[in-house]
Image 1 (cartoon, one colour):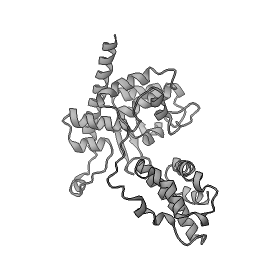
Image 2 (cartoon, one colour):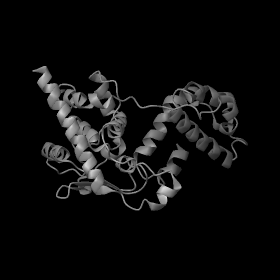
Image 3 (cartoon, helix red, strand yellow):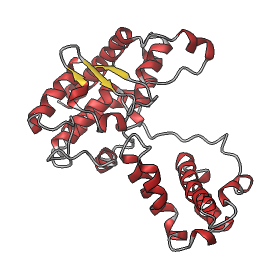
Image 4 (cartoon, helix red, strand yellow):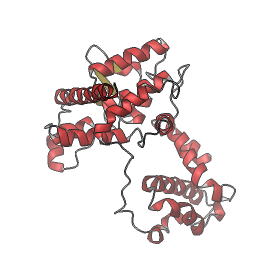
Length: 296
């Protein structure tokens, strides 16, 4: 806890401290929660990380990083002379060829999922249903949207400006809002009266729990996670449209990796992204209508 307290002030988002402690509580504490830092061994660290290393790559990296920070603190405080996290890499093996894929539905099924969630009155609070559809329409990340504030929304211009401190790339990201997304915002404001700073809340101005939408989809039998709908959007844009790759990547707030491209990437291609997102909204609306007609 002393390490967590030292780090807390340097984090931009308060959820980091909760995630930090949560991951250690889940994966590390069952093995070493009651072990003095001076007595944690290489075997302890291996026992914690081995089940995750090739199955949950991102989780394994985060847990190792957090364990290392705690043990590095112990070294600095002279409670121990080494850090086991620096020794276990060769034993665990390389993660280079291991890729984690978020569960996602085919883009043809995205509209059907929206329809299912809309109808899930008994399974979800109204704000959760609205938040899910807004997430799909904007191709935003859950972290960006979960903490979205009304002050970031310009409904007249149809723009949501995600501040750098919460954006995926640590840079301000403008998100064009289609007509349906603006309608969702109107509905969300009516739910809470617009008095709370957060756009989507779980009653009384409380932010959604981190896993709320994930649990909602699982409860409805949908084999996807919220982040996976960014993949659905990416596949649709690449397979079904002629929008340039750089526009699609900008819509996902992806960093340009090619140095030459990055040197000329001074524009956020906002107006071209607006056209792209309007096309995505029309595609989803058409799919929703077609499913409705087929059911009838």
